[in-house]
Length: 375
Image 1 (tube, rainbow, N blue to C red):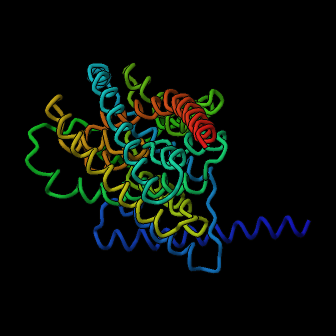
Image 2 (cartoon, rainbow, N blue to C red):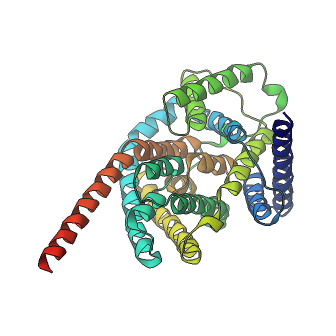
Image 3 (cartoon, helix red, strand yellow):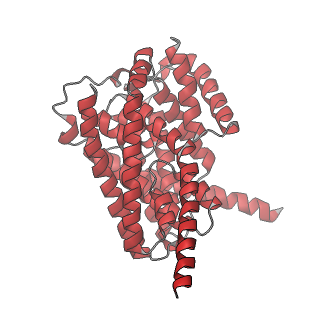
């Protein structure tokens, strides 16, 4: 009994330490007027604290899920009938851009494999954009893959994207000279607490129920996708929910930032220096490539440069939705592209990778037998 009591108390103290570290980071970033202070600040300070403090920080998946629920609800509000028609119109572009981006990542993974000495199946699985959970799960099913390296490559890329993309989209490169109106502005404006009730209770129930159902049917990131789909159906039907106060949006950012700050564990890596260096280079090249693709997408459709870039950025739907909402971009388009890629990665990529790895093993085995015969 005493052991259990102290174990719970220890976790409580560790969580309080995480909240303290994240709050310090968010407060410093807010004072310095750094973009997305309650996402980036907690992420950085939690990461630093977890490496140098004697107190082992702790954050539950439930806390992160609360943040995802808030983000999912806010993203779902942007789905109007007009937005859905536009998303359907852009489905061929979504497929084309997704395939091009994944092909580029596969080529980068081959280069990283040759330069770091890490086997290609590991670097390829670690480089697929926007699929951390799916790719780690896939890695567990394939013999000989380094799960630590996969997790590091995925998290390092996401953290780079979450740090660098806000700096880019808040810069004059994206915030000036765009002729297209920001379609998401109306939904992105922060609300007052008095405007939430009683409608928010209905939408909160819908979001939670959809998240739980999404988990039961094994949707990718159910606590994000479930609320998006549930809220979107209500919005399209004409029952629009209230916008959330900035405090709740900051809580969502804070929860996500603390979670990602604790994910990165470089001390468990083999070939640490090489893998870290090429992970950073890999992430930067992905960002540059997606920026190049976004220029093409702007010419194909009547959307802003920032909306296009966030739609194609190789991050996750939750992070890109936070950024799109913060700068009042077209949240429905950004979420549409990100979710399309998420579903493509979830349903199409794993079986393709499994087939490729099995084929690769057969080829290597045949080459080995041929070399033995020649000798």
